[in-house]
Length: 265
Image 1 (cartoon, rainbow, N blue to C red):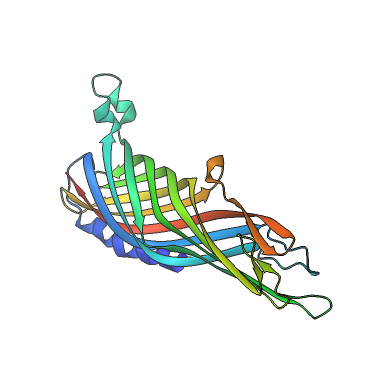
Image 2: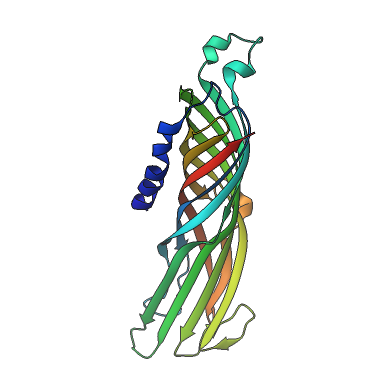
């Protein structure tokens, strides 16, 4: 992931040398489109099947890295210009505030979990698997920033992010004791589940003016899903074997980086 983010940065930094722009280079409505990568993590807990010893489970953290695209629409304003005539604009000189809505295209796969367990007697073998991905990820961000030069703006990001967690689970057991969510028992069972989840993201970014209206940008954002939003409901009831229903919990986190080209209207 670090190599991906470094490559993203190196593709955009040379554009600084091309910047020939006036003051307030990013004021107004803007549209951006970019490409980058997302490293997505899923941490599972509470998946133990206590009907066997040792207990089969898929607890633990899995992760995956994917290439993704991003589009955003926003508005940016220099604070000294925004407060001109109301406050001492010199106090705000160089500071900027922007807000954006964004959408991330493509699946963000969080990896696969696999666990094969043989009972102490050696007569029963049970395999549990779980697959996880996020999709339809969107967000709203607030970006306070500072102009380091007329054509270079750095900023922090505070974002509210929503996504859809899609998970698939399977059970294979030689004692034919896998149980489906509908109560059937057999040597295999499987089901899928989708939940809408929300989280808070923190990050940093920079914009580099190329012309009066065109600019380049880099953004990095880390998102923790689930807390403090209780309605995300990442706890699910899933049946692994006869007589045992596990109360499983799944927690997601993402680190994303994008290189973008934008247009200021």
